[in-house]
Length: 320
Image 1 (tube, rainbow, N blue to C red):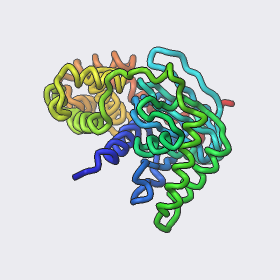
Image 2 (image 1 turned 180 degrees about the horizontal axis):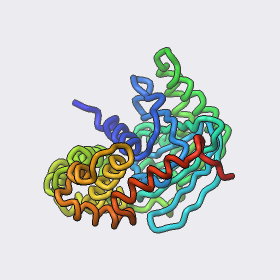
Image 3 (image 1 turned 120 degrees about the vertical axis):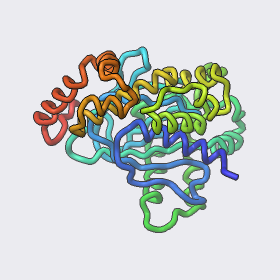
Image 4 (image 1 turned 90 degrees about the horizontal axis):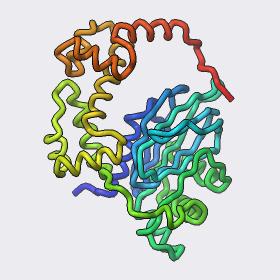
């Protein structure tokens, strides 16, 4: 029988992984990592806008190398952030999705570690501090600096990258120490731990997202999606919106447009073929939807991207 705890952590990490470009350098596996999901990524130097889904488990993101200007905003808010570098960390257990963008410097690769803390680990640390696990949440930290957090995460990074199997005793000791420290210094106040809006469990979110990604050329089918998640249409739609910040049908349309943009940018396929690939039999309907979402016709987008690619320098500029 599959471990639902591990499935949830893996689904959360995989959901975010799908949204952000980059190369995965390392992935946790084996008994040492059963309480967490850990990954190392080398990210693209530039990202215009990424939707970060709401996460049920605390997520810690630590900058391993490279400097970058990283900015975040709520879906209806303004951008805020600043320049971060190696040792900076982000901690989130967001109730709602938010947006992120960045521009990394040209000198060093922009590498980050993602660490999802499982509920068993957090509960165990909470009980050791005489805290009630059911009332605990982590507060939001953006671009923080903490020598102890960096020291522990550096040890975990070394274990992830090592050629030998990770030591369960060593890794679990680091994780227990890290989680106790986070609960002591970064847990939310009682006012921030009120009842959360209904969200889609990570394994259900991944099931729905994977199905839609695999069937972009097919008509949107809410009944099928809610059935896959063993939920009613109403409850599935509400939970999906709370988790992703948009309805399932809206997410589906935007993924169609993103797929079309990639095909227009990276291939010479005729526009009519691109339209059919993403589920539009009518080129005029495709063009209308594409213009509504991008402000450009498909042909204008292809021409503009070709010109931009020709003029783009070999390394992105870095704004301090």
